[in-house]
Image (cartoon, rainbow, N blue to C red; front, side, top):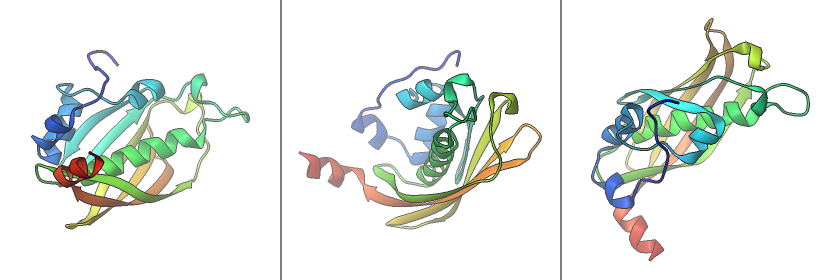
Amino acid sequence: MPGKRYGIISTGERQARTGLEFVQGLVSGSLPLNSMARTLGYDIVEADRGRVVVVATPTADHLNPQATVHGGLAATLLDTCMGLAVQSTLDRGVGSTTLEFKISLLRGITPDTGPIRAEGTVLTSGRRIGTAEGRLTDARGRLLAHATTTCLIFDQEKSVKADE
């Protein structure tokens, strides 16, 4: 992905931004994407409060032994868009992590599928729990997979101190 960089964002950098500022930094390239984005070839392209879009183009590098795209790619794209959608609703110093997610794979994906788009939308975002749903579609708008997630919302400052 031209113009994108990859790396780890320090705890201080994360805590200094609202969740939406953080996710929009990933979209604009002012913050680095994680290394998994480079490994799987995905990009975060849109972010509004409670909504995030992630895109990828499946290649032969994503194939499973049955010569279709491994379900892990769909799962990663959906987990990413849903988790970041929840993150986009949070205040400075507040983080989130996936507690669980469920995915339904509806159509096979191959490199011939072309570009795919995962859109995550928040259903609820409270003090401790956030939920979101995600839809993975192809360029024609056909639904390839859908998912739901539950995320734990936490104070990043307390989390850092607990790790010390």
